[in-house]
Length: 65
Image (cartoon, rainbow, N blue to C red):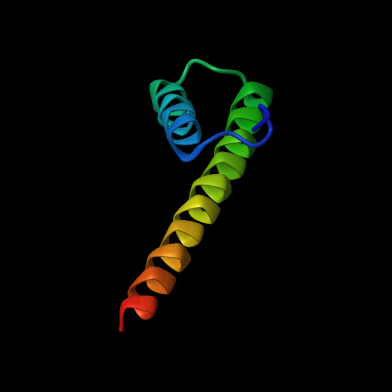
């Protein structure tokens, strides 16, 4: 996995930090926009990971039936 393709846990932790930073304020407009964009990317990574896990779980359950 590369920095561009972090694990769910790594992406989630970074996303939490992005949200905290945005909520704290004190950033410039450009910094805020960059953080927002990074947060959106991280959220998509997390969702993709969760969707993949759900598919694997569903497939495993289906095999047992």
